[in-house]
Length: 114
Length: 113
Image 1: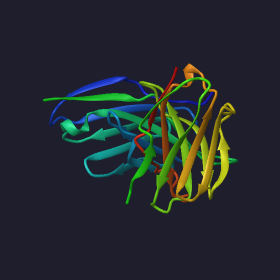
Image 2: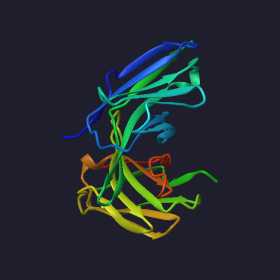
Image 3: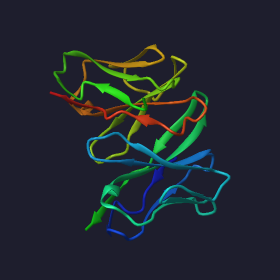
Image 4: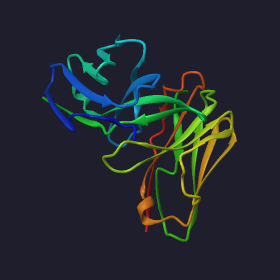
């Protein structure tokens, strides 16, 4: 079936370095691709999204890249900080008969080392 | 107020119990969601309400019964659950027009004994 998945389950980076989290998707009909951050004991928090007709979008310290040719999504975090430690999920939004469905990928644990 | 509030934070119940999870938001969102999350797994969609009407049911067993009494409240009624239903239950809300941006509560950690 259709799925959204991640290449690396755990990513360790030094504080101040840039982080790159990758995601592969298989549903070409998705309208939006989204990154969420989930800290321990909390619900997922929206970080940034990108429409399927774009290939790059920048936010504050974060950049999302979309490569539709190879169905690949990435999240780049600049100058990674300890507060960035969390699980990061990519998600895709698909329009169905009942409305938009948000389906999450498997998640990457980002660990920031001091 | 950009919070989604879920109660209780923790719940332990037996397989014959009836309990309810509650969710509240005051952001004026007209779409509300229930997700189930097992440890170290992604959230899985259960139900979507749009304008207080059930719009998506992801083939969830009938022992889970959602209810949306008004635009700010969402309940999940639980009855005759199984131990494998133990999980974190997350409520979320969004505007109907920007429904890729969900606001999540912190969840109810449910244990079924």
